Image 1 (cartoon, rainbow, N blue to C red):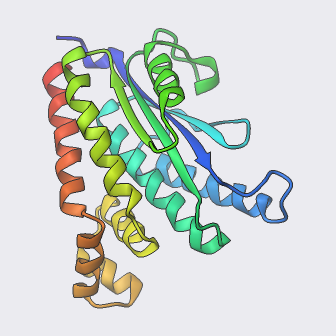
Image 2: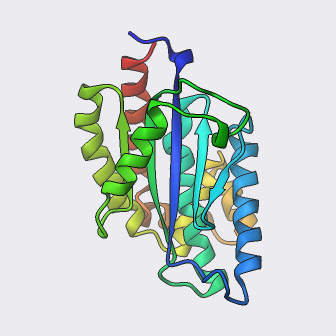
Length: 219
């Protein structure tokens, strides 16, 4: 077993079909991204902030790798929700998670380096145009099953509508269906319908599978 205190996760996100850097709404779009990053920092970890590179690529280091998949799903949901607001029907995000050692852990992602960074970067580069999500760790046995997990995440999130992504986002934040219904001013049955359409039950199984496998190999 490997000491979990030495294992971290690196999430690299690459925006797909965002507004151009010179477009009139790019400044507002970047502000919306910053709000999303702040939400993630507040709901999960704020030890190390997001590092934005080349305007459309960002890096997030998770000190605790246990929540990396949830953060990736959180980001997928929130980016899909921006489609409606900015009239960008093809807006999406490619996400790669690397789980492993970080030999150099600085005050931010830009001053950090290690195995987890290399895994995330290498796997992101390997994604085909039909893929949006990938995972890789330093454990060979875990990677075998994670290939299937990645495919399932890809398949599920690809079908998220705005309403489905919104319902999943609220659920990831820990809200109940009745609480979501009250916020959205819709019936609880409507919330249930949106979550079923977004395959929320299957998503929860994937999250649990990720947690169980991580805890099995990392102690």
